[in-house]
Structures are given as C-alpha cells and as structure tokens.
Image (tube, rainbow, N blue to C red):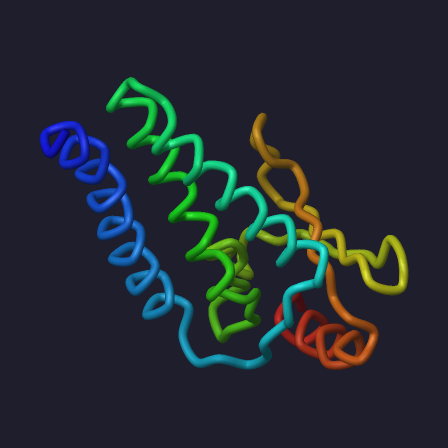
Length: 150
C-alpha cells in the first residue's frame, strides 16, 4: 500500500515542482506587472471541477503511472486557479505561459468580453488565443495593447 501511494505521489510532486519553477522563471522574464485580468467564474468552476475529478480518479485507478499523471494534471489545474492572466511589460501571462508582445500581430474584440489575439507566426497548434476580459477592464486592456503593439 505504501509503495503504491509513494509511486502515485512522486510524479505529481515532480510535475508540481517543475511547473512552479518554470512559472517563477516566466514571471521574471515577463517584467513588471501592468494589469491583472480576473478569472471568469465559469473558468474557476471548471478548473475546480476538473481537478477534483482527476484527483478522485487518481486515487481510484490501479495503475501508478496513470493515477500519478491524473493527480499531476489536477495539480496543474489547481495552480492555474492561482495564476490569473496578467499584462506585463514583456507580454501577457495566461495559463502560466508568457506570450511575448513581439509574437502578437493584432487583436480584435469578438464580443464585449472576449479578446482574440492573432499571432505573427502561425504555428499548426496555435494561430490565435482567446482571453476573457471583464467589461470593467476593457478600456485598460485596449490602452495597453495599443501601446505595446505599435
């Protein structure tokens, strides 16, 4: 029992430590904070729900590798809860990743609260990125984007 528990927890703990170290490095690279974009209630609810399901599955599944991966993925979702999207000097941090200003070609508002970023280099995996922005922050976000994407 102890061996299984240790095997299940080693992978998530290792993933958690690596993710936190990378996150700290990204925040240093991103520069000074310009604006915090609060998380939507739906996204917060979704992350809590997914992480709860994955943690329960992680302890229920018999395979140490699958259950460890499940708990590791759940921990990354929980970290996202505490990493709001931010506009910084050198780019935008979203889901713990830094999108540099130099990679953004343009932006447009798809709705009153949905910002669509289009990238200069079109990768097969990510041509654009959507960010939910509350209406109260829209003017500030617009000002920062206009200043940074000149």
